[in-house]
Length: 417
Image 1: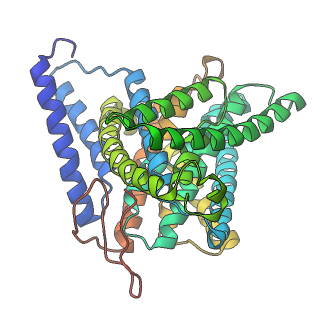
Image 2: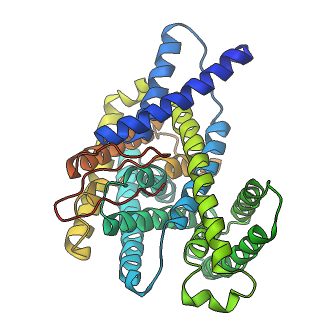
């Protein structure tokens, strides 16, 4: 595809953006997640080109770059829409432990399956199981606008925690010597350091945003956030804390905990910044999400998914993931059962972590089709749960905010994005 005319490429990119926008409209009417439609479009586009003997080649690095940018924007977008208060502490606690327990149990169960299925070192199987155990906030967050406020906030917190915890544990596993005392101390030390740095950096960035008077300032801040995330990743720090906490600080600046800082940054200034950041992150995340899921779908070899061994192994993994999620929500959390049970798609983080597995931990017998199969099937399961919860209805069009009819007695709420 290197010899494609530049104008043809530009036209193709514009058509993809238009198509993604139309998918948003379809999502509002049908409840089918637009990211799933983009993924399927990429798969179909690849098959059409191959059928016409046109070479298909997309670098995994390109998919990874789109994935990283999309993750940053989506986590920031989630943070900007969340409110923290005493009345939210129980919900946040439930979401955190739901993400942590389900993640750990899913990783252990999936690694045991891979261990007996492939007969390869257990630690290698555990490293492969970790990406498969992380719930994708990139797919969940744009798809929950029709849920009531409590369910929506629970899923935003849970998936955000799942992303962050998944990355933290994955980085710890690939660092080696997981049971060594010094490594354990370093691990918890890095968590504490990241939390402190995140709070300090969030205030500094917010201060800069309210002081910069030039028209070009917000993408400068986005560049700083991306730089901090990439730098944190290279230092093996949970850098997503910086992104999430910055969004939380902006959205909760009116709380009493920040009153002593009002002499430097007033609530009115932050309110103006919040409105502009909402608009910019919605537009940016829409664009990046479009390119990521389409290009990722373009890299999927559909023949791999149709392999009988892939179907059997992938189905077993999906059954494990769904079973563990049901058991925890039903018997331990005693709430958030439907439709939260079905909101367990694997996606952006799964792909990013999978591409980050060091060569020393590669499983020689692992079929990548299993990864693609799990991502597709869990997304379809989420689609079924979303449609079953309530039929969407068309409302004012903005980025990716499908608004749907609520259950009797529930109010219609505005979307995350």
